[in-house]
Amino acid sequence: METGLVRKIKDGDREAFDRFCLTLYPAMLSYAKVFLSDEGAEDIVQDVMLGVWRRREILDENYDPRIYIFRSIYNRSLNYLKREQLASDFRSWNERRIAMYEHETLDPDRNPVVRRLLDGDLKDSLLKAIDALPPKRQEIIRMHFVEEIPNKEIAKRLGISLSTVENHINAALKKMRATLSEEEFMLLMFLMSSHIFLN
Image: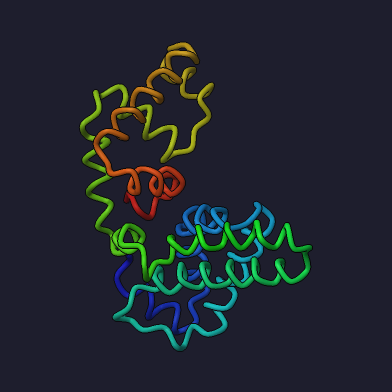
């Protein structure tokens, strides 16, 4: 993270806060979508970030705010699911309860993989997995996941066919799946598009 960023936010620097939100947004939204629909996830993320801004004076400069933010998303998502349970019939409630218990394994306080991700430890695992790929595959994977460039555009830029791009991506994911643990691979798949874990 940028040195002094928390101090700037605490001091009311809206530009610093907006820059922080813009950088972290893809990862926050991906995390929230594990629990909720697209619309619900967006609402939760916006509420959490608004809450951070309103209570910015309590931020601790020695404590990574991303950990607090992801824990807030987790707690608000489960609270949302619980409210939905009360408004649904028994069958739907039971299905949501099962889903909620499954999601509890993603609690950043309980899941060491999520903790490692937030602490930045998984950055090395991901980069090593990418670096182990052939050069062309590395380039395509970074364009696809990191830069979020559509496959058709990748094919056009590199002067290759769409099917070749897709074959490279599939082969790269297969290779990375063999390199990373199952938990690492699944978690990184939906957070891989966030620059905050790669820059």
